[in-house]
Length: 292
Ligand SMILES: C[S@@+](CC[C@H](N)C(=O)[O-])C[C@H]1O[C@@H](n2cnc3c(N)ncnc32)[C@H](O)[C@@H]1O
Image (tube, rainbow, N blue to C red; front, side):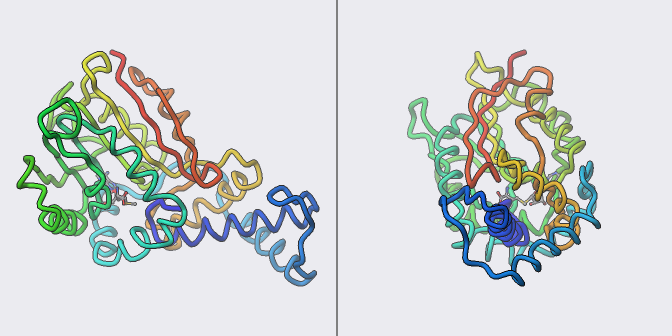
């Protein structure tokens, strides 16, 4: 899946394969209703790999990388980020479809945080004067390297010929309120960035986004696509035991087992309106509004 991180894409594919195979090992054949053809040595290898990962992993990671670390790391990832996270693997997992579907809802003055290289930019509908589409775009990221790529994409898409675009380097876990003030944006977007901020950082960021978005009764909305803990118990357990290792070992700092729906429900003044599940719940889209 996404997650927008190459390693995550690989690991999640592995997780799906391994989970499927574990189900087969148990004879449950949950996906296709028949027993497998994997041989004993393959089964033993898979079982011991999972056991080894479980033994060395922290079950409930609480923090990923700090804003400073994210800034440095993503400066390095920037030039190659799109190769996998924007490539055919991401597309095959349904990430492109999820981006396009959700971002069609964006309207008015829009803020995107953790914009990265700008993989969402081509999915926004630009306003043609009615109530549909976005009328301005403010793009925030902590990494100047990622913002440089986003800047190039803005130019390639010719966005500035249609709407005002601002690009700002800032920490979305602490600076949105001071930069923009309360109730400023009609739409606030985040895709695959909360996982990089860790559980505490993600909650702070959700609070910051809630502060700057207009209230629901004024048409304000927060649109998210995030890695999430799967509702498939086996896959969810696999994510739990591998999340920390994956984040550390090339997962670009992304904790891919966050319960984002639960986080949203615990943010004061934020209401979850709709949630859509993709790839067995490995990632989800969320539509939220501010209530107060
Ligand atoms: C996995 S990438 C996702 C990029 C893009 N949203 C996408 O969907 O492809 C995470 C992005 O979040 C940014 N980021 C991480 N921590 C941040 C923070 N505290 N404030 C702002 N951006 C942050 C990173 O620099 C990176 O560009």
